[in-house]
Length: 495
Image (cartoon, rainbow, N blue to C red; front, side, top):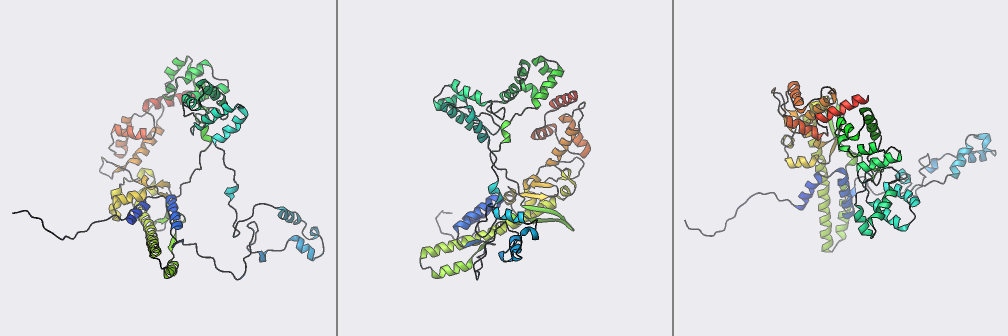
């Protein structure tokens, strides 16, 4: 058969990711803070969008009466007369009518506090709360009294800018000396001066130096304590026998010195926050109802926007320029898309959260030991969605339950097989059980990873290997059996 070119017409279906569809997908994985910031930007850009509660103020027949936010009454016309006015109407003194009221009226007359803004709104109390000083501010209040030479103050500025959040010096002295054209000795002399500032331990270059600064201030940095600081690796491993031999002291003196170390602050800068701590706000609430669990969205954090079609109709009727008409049509399409996307996002979050609650009913009733293994595919198949959609919905979303506040990703864990033929066990539940076993172990009988694996198999029929137990233990920052044995023996000896 000869090969020859020819024309054919075929009809097929394919999914095209338009810019609006891609934006809708991106909205799913935004947190409520990021979503509100995105909607705020759209409100500024699109004249056809407005907030649902942002209607036009009604026209008043007369000028509105501005009421101070510090008054108890709601309207000035309903405000009761003062004690002075009532006493004046009776042609007598205030003390004869309201002896206890006169001081209150005088206090109100002399009050010169902040007044409300436009519309009579009360000022935000946060505007009058003093900001917490930063570590840099706290140090510079002392540096101004400690150093008088301008060159030394410039070096101190560079050293202060190089501090980490824990209060350690994160830059090399040679680097600062090269930038300023100074000698390393001059920088180190200023550093020694700064290490005397409060809080003690700042400007240290490592943990050993940080603890040494605090001990030197207490006049406890003797040669034996210095040798202890030089062997902090043995302290971390709780190898008391080797530590006592290296330091050159008996067990009782060693325990006393370790007690002194526990009273020091290895991170002196953590008392000064670099920024505000954002509280986690749940996106979904789960509560017990008469017939089961009730799942509802947190409506307070969801942005509400409307499309002002009346404004669109009035403007398009007077517009003659084609570019303006194109702009208005684009704004209308964008506004319609945004309102539909926000509604679809809310419904998708609610649908996924409801399925998670249905899957984890035992966990909500009985605790973490009954957390079921659950995957994205399991939830996606149950609600007829794609796994990627469920993954985006559960990112940066939190759910408030009677068991506490959890990220939605928390409920998705891998499964560990059961040797008894029962349902598989969640990896998170297994980790919780491992922590319980380790917390309950006595000092004389420390559990090894092999022993923990055997106990899990004997108690709950969980098929888990020793290396899996070690992996879960290390992920929870739990030391090995050797170090735990030394730690608990040291605690028993200290008592």
